[in-house]
Amino acid sequence: MKRPFQQVDVFTAEPYRGNPLAVVLDGEGLSTEQMQRFAHWTNLSETTFVLPPTSREADYRVRIFTPTLELPFAGHPTLGTCHAWLSGNERPGTIVQECGAGLIQIRQDGSRLSFAAPPLLREGPVEASLLSELAGGLGIGVEDVVDAAWADNGPGWVALLLRSADAVLALDPGELRHDVGVVGAYPGGSPYAFEVRAFFPKDGQTVEDPVTGSLNASLAQWLLSTGRAATPYTASQGTALGRAGRVHLDRDADGTVWVGGDVVTCVEGTVHIG
Image (tube, rainbow, N blue to C red; front, side, top):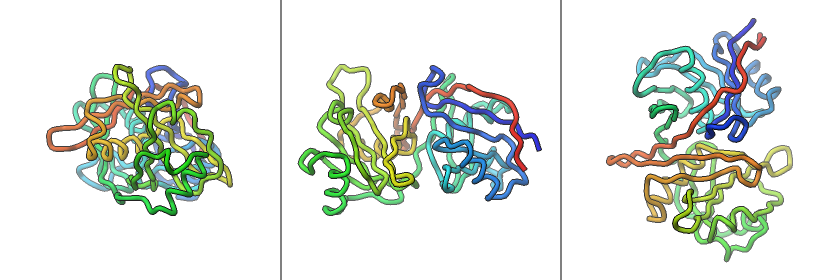
């Protein structure tokens, strides 16, 4: 069966400089096994399937798959799926996405989309043994880590703050067994407030994600709560991979953190699944 399909680039206004996402715009009738098989075939960090919502408050429902498993929530798939969905739907104002993590609000500001950061599932200090393991896997000493915290909003992130953006860019990680996000500040007056890198284990190797919405969401919540950041700010990610991801962070008066970015369509057509 032919199904409408888009491959989009997220957190960039320039094609092929952000994080790609495959979106199947009609996932009705597909089994979990079929979705997972297709996501494994695309071999992108995430592939999404759009379905009718089960909640009356939602505009659509999305299922998010990595090549090996399903996620309840992820950031760049949220913005990328919404961008693709909007190509065939008129929806001014706020869009509500239903996913495994619940209902996620997405708002439009010109060409930019932003999602409301979900609450953290786990936060607080990192155990000393885990911190030592992560520092060793990154090729640095524990003394090089300014602060560390759990920043888990679904994928399981552990966040490490280093002394500078340069220290983040200098990382050459070895084997890691946990999803870890690393952040360091740029000097005052720079166009970006922070450099971010995201690492996770896959098939016995350490993989780096080009631009990561979920991590930037939880990093913002952590950095804002500790007084290390002030909104609005822009984070840079993907530099070490030759990408130019730009993640825009803001916070409402009620404390809601918004994670935004541009999205561009790179491939459009149909795919045969089922």
